[in-house]
Structures are given as C-alpha cells and as structure tokens.
Image (tube, rainbow, N blue to C red):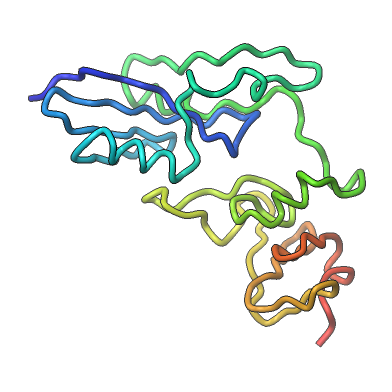
Length: 193
C-alpha cells in the first residue's frame, strides 16, 4: 500500500465567504486522490491530473489565495485553517463552513454588478443566488436549485432580452434570466405567451 507523501488543502473560490474544502493527497507511487466535501474520492494517475481537476472546478490551494478574499466588512478573518477530524467520516462534516455574516438579500436592494454576474455565471441559482450543487462527479453544476427549487424553463422567454432555450429559471422565489440577469417576480421577468 502506498503512503501519503504530500497533502494540500483547497477551497472553492466561487463559494467564498463560505468555505468549501477539498483535500488533495499524493501517494508514494505518484498517484493522487481528491477527497471532496460530498465525501467522494476521485483518483488520478498523477498530481498534475488531480490539480487540473480541482482548478477546473475553481478550487485554489488555500495557501495561494490572497488573504483579502477572506475579509468581509465587519469580519476580520485570517487565512482559514483546514478542517480536522479523526477519520474522513468526521472530516467531511467539517468541510463546509458557512460564513457567520448573513448573505445579502438581493430583493432588498437594486442589482449590483456582482449579483448580475452571479445570476449569469452558471454556478449560482439566477433566482436566489445560492451556489448550485455539482453532480456526483463534481464536473458541472446541477440544473436545479436545492434552496429555492428554481430550474430552467425551456419554453419561456425573457421580457428584457427575449432569450429562450432554458435561459429563464423559475421557482418559488420568482424568476430570473441567466442571459441578461433580469430577476424578480415571474410577471416581471417572463413574457406571457
């Protein structure tokens, strides 16, 4: 059995200020393994393959992320320390750390550049801005929000940009267009057929 020769910790930068951890281990036989916050293991023939896998999912090594990314107004946070546990079962329960500062409620203020960007990036729910969960292989975001229940509506059209083909997401909290970023009540976003 190969022994661990290197262990590094990675954070999903799209989830900041929440901490979404992944662990990368390299073994003496030069194979590598990624352990993610869903408790899944992905094995690779080399360190480089594992690194590319994490970078594709927008993870960065925690020691290479600028400390400024961990600082929020009203919260001085230093570079976070990786989670610890007696085994991987205990560890996975500590690999998602929510920020103590409540998220901004987009319905309480006008849109900002960052909100519009998140509504269009394919990684966040365009309706409630929650981070979309990834599939079991962690290669792409699911097309349904587990927070508000929103999902693409292939036949509906955006009131602002006329986009169709799944650009409109609709859920309990309202609707949004992931092409132009328009969001609000269903009546304000969706053109009546």
